Length: 528
Image (tube, rainbow, N blue to C red; front, top):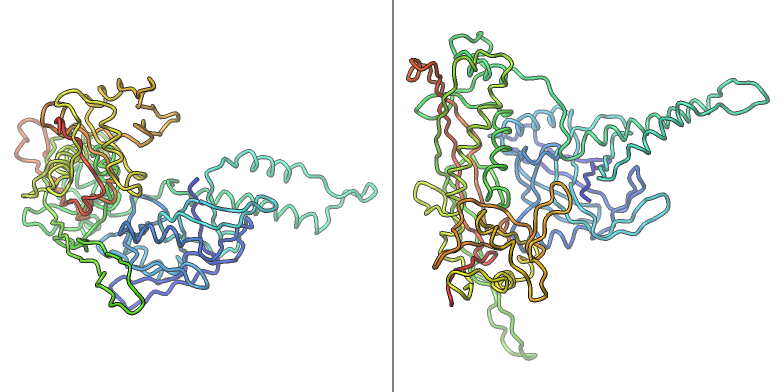
């Protein structure tokens, strides 16, 4: 069960004159009960923070728990005597981050909320818990009203609608105190009913903060201007709409897509691009990203009481991920653009995501790093495990592949293979006659092989002599995708005008590379 919780008595420090986007505050307080009576103990985050350090990861910085709305990064997270202290930096190249910065400066937003899963807790009276260990996923900046009842937000996956309806019924039908036939409602009775109504309203507002919850916001001037540009062109826009368009910084011209379009594009990309589903994705405004890489582990040794201690320091290097440009164009009929019933921007976002997803899906797997990302299967440091036979896939080979990884990566691993290989694996059985494939038991749950999820990647090799049809491992730790956030759109109404079409050119920049080859293994179809 994943929860999100906004801190009461929040303290956020933000320098209004600082253009670097630095932010600091407490994301959780220890030994303080929230509105549900839950208390987080000191040290509850220690294990999760240690795991993040070992994997060289950090919880992501989101806006209101929306996984498609990354607005920066957390640079430092530590437990203090008071609580979980965080320090990070907003990515001011992202429109949502600039909006968040402005809201924080004005005092309209003052909330930090953690997305987490409870690992260990002691149950108390009335459903309250003493939380002893937490798996920290993300820390969001959230909008909290000044009202006290909305200060603490604890979002639970359990359905509380029945409880809410019962509470509402109790409020609506509760009888006044019996005073010998006098039906006068006392001030105390009114206060009790108001408290119950406030509790119901609080739970409704808590639901609105749940990760994934969506509310339909009024379309901003930037979105309206971009939609008008797509349908009719720049010449037909009003003066204020032309001013709202942001000119792209590329020499080919065009305009930057608004945040709503970019969010829809990225959401669709995740559905189309298989590696993007599993890898760690971040954004940058630069042409490349340099990440630290540990090239040698520390070595410990036994020594005597007065003997010299040998050097045990690990060796560190760097991995530089370059951002490459991808371009695509789509032809749309003039009649469709004139049809007001068509949400043309959503259609463009889906079509471009489908095309970008196709080319980046191949590059993230087999790209050679020349004008494109370097892929998982193309990196020379990724080790392989032999199948034991050149053409016949065996269940024992999958077991060997899985257990070739350390437990930390194995327990977080996923399988990558194409549809043909999936069809072969579904027929494999263990020595006891059980199929190693298991379909998901609930909607949204992926199928599993040996207990780990399967991701279908159409660009993986087929089962044949000398190929690598299967990859297994902790892809999130092993592979990093870096997106240049801006997407520019160029409207060309001339080149296809004789066919009644308008051509839209789009360009975006993305990069990817293996940062931890030891976290994954690939299966080679060979005897040894």
